[in-house]
Image 1 (cartoon, one colour):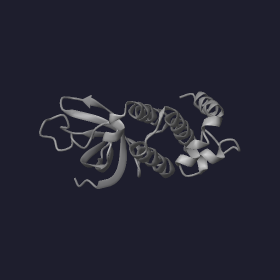
Image 2 (tube, helix red, strand yellow):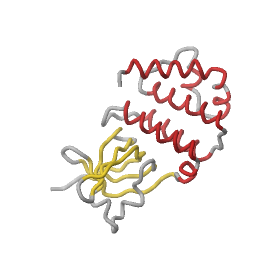
Image 3 (tube, rainbow, N blue to C red):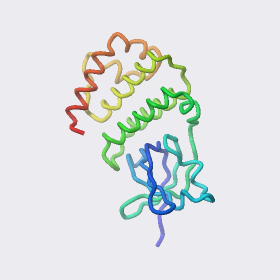
Length: 195
């Protein structure tokens, strides 16, 4: 039987051990949306995948579709994660952001706008220096945009600039005075989603 190898980019949201030496990964991919993929023999010392497949990594993947789950045949890191992991508050934000993505997104539903947003958030986290207040503003806008791309928040007058503009420092500077309103929109949307 010949298997077709699919190549895509993705973000590893989480993983857990499976059987003796395998690992199951939850990956949000550019071309297939949220998928579950198995790294066969991943936990063995001689595995070539183990160094490029860690939680919170941005990766290029070669995948083979199985009956119930994808199988990872090759992976390469795309973006560095070290700067994020070394900063506790950034890392905590990324963990919670990826948990929310995993919770809200249905499996195997492609969403290119959302993938671009996640890539934008990931790049800003690794490049920008945020103080505590800036990081709260960044978190607020990131989650607001996530919910907007999933259809939980519309582009109303009070949130439109934050969900339609390019994610940048000038946009983040406008968040502080409206943060309380934006957080209420976020909480209302999550509550109404029943997830």
